[in-house]
Length: 332
View 1 (cartoon, one colour):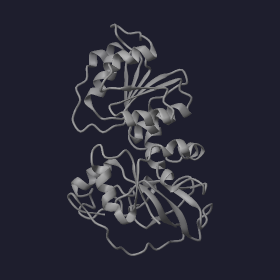
View 2 (cartoon, helix red, strand yellow):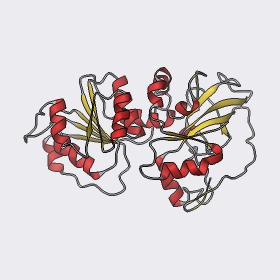
View 3 (cartoon, one colour):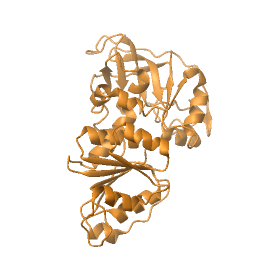
View 4 (spheres, helix red, strand yellow):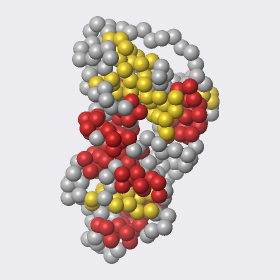
């Protein structure tokens, strides 16, 4: 739990009390999100600044079921919807967090707040359900069709999840752009059709070579239909809009900490759509079936696992730029 600006501690709390509509889950794995770094630096979110539970990427095993709950049984392996908690978003300013031995799922309804998964899915992979829902919503926001050619900028967990989602939806060609070779290797492993290393290649020129020349008022545009910013660098927006043909779509799921200048004449003249993406209004369990069906591919995204006994080491690794891709904390 966050106990102050830049401070986290393992704190003993009372075991949750299960009500008739609740389910108690023993957490078996919980991912660490980039947003956790922001929360820690701020000392938490209102109204829980100074004492805020962390963890919003959980997977676990049901150990107690309230008498009024249906469709959930003791022993079930489950993933959880953090935004479905009546006491506030789990691990995002709510009363509970999933970086804990036990998590109470209040008003548990299968398919809304909790979902059962097969017991053969590794918990550290199941813990990807929440960030993969973020990626799936970003993809849905760009309204892909099978004929589209897509460029995903950023091969971190969300970019890789988006790559899997685009291919799962039957998209024709997905190119992933990043600066780190090992991340691009992962992009190919999860199904990208091609990759571009922005550190030593001309991205705009390579996109034209891969996706053909685009129709636009000015020459030098790419035939890319969709650009997805999962990197959060101003250069991504600049490159995408400079390359965008008539009718192209730019989705933004990465967090930009500073304003980014945009040429609106270009957007107007080429009728480019720019759409943002936040969270997962309907996708939290939409992604679960694909995660279950193709879990070996999703497993590539996890770069580090830590036992809860070293949760501080896990946080330090996850929050150190360049030290890890996806860190998951596991519980015995």
